[in-house]
Length: 59
Image (tube, rainbow, N blue to C red; front, side, top):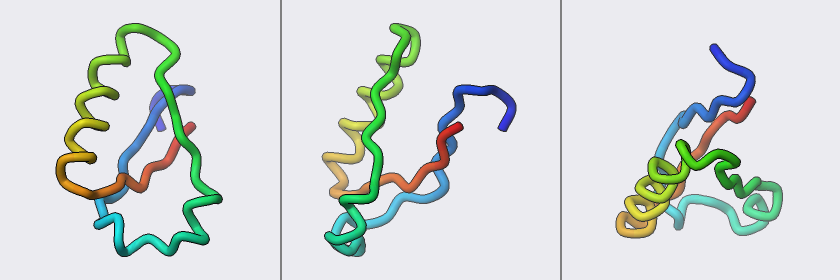
């Protein structure tokens, strides 16, 4: 990944396709800086409307 603080979304999958046991192993990220707040809010809003979750890599 090009930076030390990057989030790469690998896939969008239906929420129902995720095994509930695996959800406990997930991470919930929040932006540290104000510049990243708006894109994160837009992504969260879009995901909630579509009933999908994002599978991502974080570095």
